[in-house]
Length: 187
Length: 187
DNA sequence: CCAGGCATGTAATGCGTTACATGATTTA
DNA sequence: TAAATCATGTAACGCATTACATGCCTGG
Image (cartoon, rainbow over all chains, first blue to last red; front, side, top):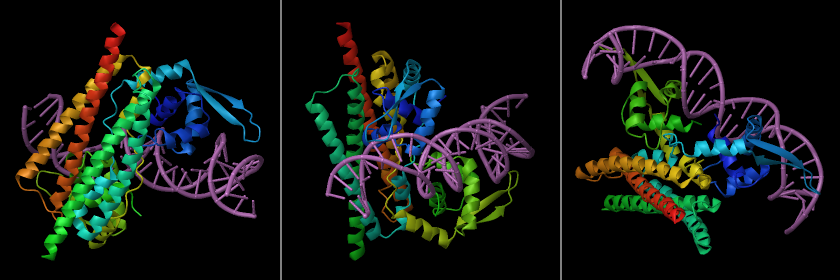
């Protein structure tokens, strides 16, 4: 068996061959909002994948840049990824720090809570704008079919947009609650 | 500094004094959908909190049941929780296995993908029903004010309902995509 | 000349998960 | 009589995060 981060790396390599550094970049850019892995995890994980025969690498010498190891997924790696793909996801040990804080927000002064959720609103609004932009750019080129790798990009960004839209709505509701609380205190 | 799981325990103790076992129960029932911690983590974490002076405990002897250690939050613990509460949450290393699988779903046969998302739809529908039920029961008693501990319960369950509703919608959309793909293959 | 990008790693520490360990009582 | 509940812990292992470590090239 493989760790989920191992599958995340395979998921990227299933699309194209990449170096460890490239993988770290893709983690930051493409799949950042649903999967992150530190680069310090990527290198040992790649070594492990190679041991299992799921990836191979070859050294690429470059002019005026450090040499890099280009990793390529093997047929066995692709099969392992496909087998994992359709297994029901683990009951997901969800860990949402924002909600954990919200659970205890009754302890704070309304003013502090207001500042807190206004900042959250800004943060989620920004992300919503980014995701909506990505979604639009994909749609302009036509909605990808399920057999297209770009379908994964599109399907996940749709979740991102829906998710952030709900959080924006929720933050606004939270802000309202604390504003009302403040107004009642003033009376 | 304290781990987030430490604050999760403080968040529960801020409402009432509990034993380690009780905390594990509350994790499963009340805050399960945004925070989980194994009981094997709870006991060392409680010891750590006690070292820091954030909680105290006393032994409660019980008839026909094992004795238990009842933990109570201290003023210092409450202050630590309040200070943490209003700090912006960490950029949240989101790890969503469902989306990671979706990112690579183009590798599978539509039939397998259909079975996969139908199962997900069932799962999220069930959770939506549960959360909607909790929300309704709270609302029947009147919406709690922000200074009420139950406001935390209500605010978080609202997110749960919105979240699951979006996932249900999204799963239905995914299923449609694969159904269309299958129909086109048949022609 | 300094910051940032490209490129690959190792080390330390701590958290999370799973399994191990015990034992009494209650309920089906 | 077997399983579930109450109750508290320890141990092993692996993954995640943060910091440490190096070094060349490019652009401002």
